[in-house]
Amino acid sequence: MALKIKNVKHKPARDGRTNTWCGPAAVSAILGITAEVAAKRIKAFRVRNPFATRKGFSNRKNSAHGIGWAYTSEVLAVIQSSGYPGTINHNDKLVRWKREHGTRQTLAQWDANRAPADRLKLFLVVLSDHFIVVQGDKLVDNHYNNGTTLSECKTWKRTRLTDVYEIRK
Image 1 (cartoon, helix red, strand yellow):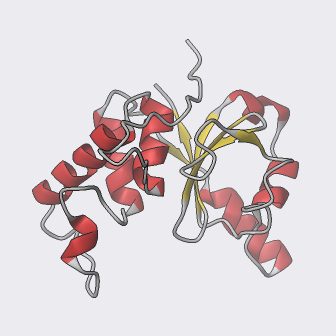
Image 2 (cartoon, rainbow, N blue to C red; image 1 turned 60 degrees about the vertical axis):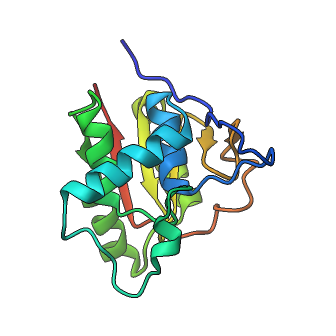
């Protein structure tokens, strides 16, 4: 069974607004749970891992209303503990690109150089402290809750990639 990218699910706040950070939005797009449940799972992992505290960040961003940041390791731990243990790191390709070209790959360059077989796969992409989920030409994050195409996405096209992970069942 092939994995499918999902739209970010929100449970609107009392004032009707939905304010979701990129970590919970990425987990929501992969697992199909609401972003609020994803934030609670990330916070639960953070409590179990006492070393996952970031110096210099206020506790206000880690309040009961949600989380203001997430480490890549926290997002991957939540995904892997939810039945997707086959996460594959594709960073060797990024390192090879940097060695050949002298700079990190942009999202547009990564998309243009993906193999046709990779277009069916589900990827968690880390863009300089921002999480997006990509499958085929569809991109989902907290800015594009219902998804957009990579060709139409002007926001992240020229952003440099930090990490790429293939999500497998």
